[in-house]
Structure formats: structure tokens, C-alpha cells
Image (cartoon, rainbow over all chains, first blue to last red; front, side, top):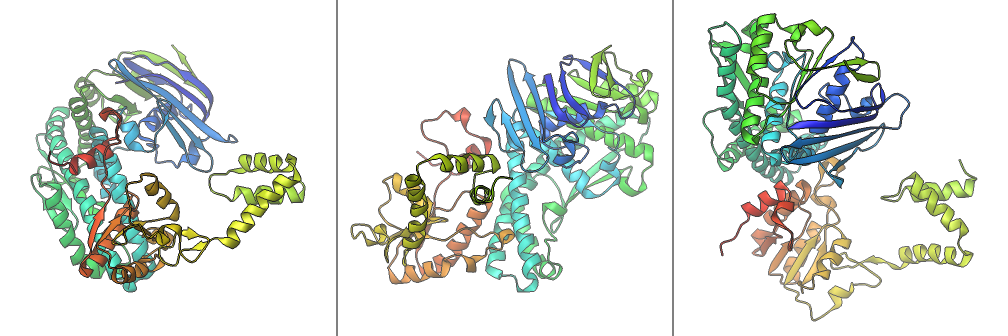
Length: 367
Length: 197
């Protein structure tokens, strides 16, 4: 999988950019604030239709412009796809995949695979369950494009249920809640089955890569904790999981009516990570957490390479400044061959050989 | 800003679904340049539709009399009812020429986000009809969305205790198309709802 060209109009600080990267390693060098990360963000935006900086769409539009246009062609072996996104400062964005109207994440996930290593990846281990759920869902959506639509459908029914609870509280119509519970169990069961399937592929890869990355002898392990069900072992089917959710939801009905929100379901789950038996979130050192998060991203890369038959596009945003030299070299050694985009403020800290690009506000030139 | 009468029309047109500022301007200037007679006919058609059209007292389809033409048609099978979200969905089902029963327009689907619950939809009226009209089968043709599916499930739970058969339209592949043009979700549903040959 590689990006053949990228064209930006009124995207962040770029009035206009046409970028033809190398199919191998691309190192983007420039001062802080020169717009290196914006290029990586734009590549990620085409692949996921969201900003990895968690910026709202309107923030992507260059100041004073009506809309940002992000276009790019990805090729995978003999097949290719052109993705175009028009992001207006206000209103809905428009997505075209090969000139035809796409609707959702599933449409782009079908044609692009991408893994990004970000400076704040420590959040994956350190912060709340939402970071880990997003990580799992993102890999699942790229492994099975249908999973992206399943996630959207579950979110939709959850929003409907929460709207009913928020508005009516204890007087919410029981029959309507029953039906929403039923739909939420079914869609939640499907979502859970996907998450467990992807976790069973990622888990062993994370443990193995973690062991490879550092000198630490302690083992990394994880389990999936389903809200209202408990820790889930093995891979139960969607129907069985839906059954568990159905019981969980009816058990939580009273509490949900009181608290006017859904307290049970995949939107409250967590992936509990441990290192040498200690909770990684609260009782691991910063260095250990950094290595675990690298292991998680690398595992995503390996699993997706395996599933899709070619290496995803890889983004490394200012990753090496956070790593000591030996860990950086070990990370590079574990990267399968494919197209890579690296940003850095200092050329000497990037242990990768490849085409070098100089980024100066609004322009990218080959060195 | 245009002169007040022009701007007023542009604003009104821009409130219509699917019409933005630019289209509204184009339409307004088009209307400004056509014959006065044509403009009057357009205005008259809008007024007349609003005055003459009402809802069928039985199925809530749009009609210009007490009951719609479908409900009045004695050749139609009164034991089968097809439930749709909106009146315009009836036309879509009618075009198939495959359904010879009657209809029931719910007026939307269950969506707490928009403040629509069963009480805002014509569910009670449907229950009454099932009883009064000796309906044997209710075919739920709500949209295949989260809201449409939720509404279908609600209807099934509401009506089954009355001893009526409740069915849902199948989701699946478009006919005459290639398998590789189907999106994953549609194909997934078609796979889940497969039939033995």
C-alpha cells in the first residue's frame, strides 16, 4: 500500500500543495510549526476521515478559506484508488472514492490501510479506556471494512437510547427502551465479537514485540473487560455476546433510568493491560508505558499487513525524539518494508535511510 | 442582499430540503423572468395542494377525499397491510406492481434524538385497524436504518400478541448487479439472511 500523490488546497497552512512522495521512506524535516505534521495528518485524514490530532473538521480549513480540499491516490499492487474530501468550514464534508460518492469510514477503509505512531501515543496505555477502545476499533475497521459501519450503527442506537434516557429519565417509555435494548444488544454483540477477534490477533503480537523492543524481562499481557459482563475469555460468538449484553442491560435498567445514560455496553469497555502482573496504567514506569504503546502500534502494523496482504502506509510523527537511540533502532528494525512518512525537527535523530524533504511554511521541496 | 421581495422569495426557497442559497437564487431569478401567468400557475398549484390535500382517514396516505384511491379500491386485499414511514414510500412500493394489499403511513420512525417516540407515530391507529379490518399480515417496510429497524421491532412486539403475522422486508443484493459492487454491509446482511435452494 502506498500513497502515489497528495494534493492539498486550503488545508491548514497550505494554500496549495502537490506532493509526490517516494514509494519507500520519506523523511520530512523542518522547524516546529512548519507544517510537517499537517502533511501526515492530511494523509491520515484521507484514510480515516478524521484528524489524528482529534481536531474538528472546521479546524482543517485554512484561515479565511471556505473549504479545505484533500485529495490523494493510494495504490496497492495493480489496483489503486483516488480519495477526495471536501471539508467546508461549516456544514457537511463530501467524500469521493474513485469519483463516486462515498458515505463513510467503511468506504475508505476498503481501499486504504494506515498506521500512525504519534507523539502522545503514551495516552494509549496511560489514559482512559476510550483511547484503547479507539485503538481496537480503528484496527478492526481496517481489518474488516464492515466493522466501521457496525461501529457507526452501534453508536447510533446508543445515542438514541441516551437521548430517550436524558429526556425522560425515570418516566422513559419501557416498551421503547426494551426495543432499543434489544437492538443495542444485537449490534453490541457484533461489535464485541469483532473487538475480541482483533484483540486475539493483536495480543500475542504486542507481547512478542514488547519483548523485542526493550531489555525488560517482564511479560506484557491483557484482557478485555466488558462492562456489565466482566472479563471475556476466548472468543464467544456475536449471538452469545448479545445474550450477555441483554442480561447486562436489563440488570442496569434501574441505574440507567436514575443516571439518565447507558451505563452498560461496549462503549464502556476497557482493555486492561498488565506488565509482570502489575497494572500498566497506574503501576508501570513511563519507559515501560512508552514501549507498550510502541508495541501496540507495531502489532497493529503487523496484523494489518498479515490480513490485507500488503504493508499499510506508516506515519511516524516526531517519534524518535521521544525514544533513546537504541530503542529507536530496534523499532526501525521491526518495521516491515513499506511506505513510511517520518517527521522530525532534527535530521540526525532519524535512524532511517530514505528520501529527505525540507518543509518550510506552506512548501515541501526535495533535498 | 437583494431587493426585499426578491430576498424574501430566496429565503423561502432556501428553506426547502435539498436547496441551498445558490439554487434558491437561481430559482428566484428564473421565476422573476418567466411569464406572469406561469408564475401564477406555480403559486396556485402550491396553494391548491395545501388546500385540497388531506390525509386518508384509514391509512394516512395523501388524498383529496376522505379515503385515498388505494383504500377505496375494492379489488385490493384488505387482509394485508404494508407499513411505511412516509406517504412517498407508498409510491415506491406501488411501482413494483407486486403488492395488492393496503398501506399504513406511520409518519416517521422511532428516534428519541428528534423527540419521536411511539406516541408521535400512528401506531395506535394501526392496532385499531388490525382489529377492525381483520388484517392477517402486517409487512413492515420501514427504512433499513437503526431507527427503521427499531421501529420494526417495536411494531412486531406490539402486534404479534394480537395474533397477526408480522414480516419485515428482506435486505440483500441489488438484482442484476455484480457481487463485487455490493458494499460489505449489504453483502453481510444478504449472507445473514441467505436461503436454502
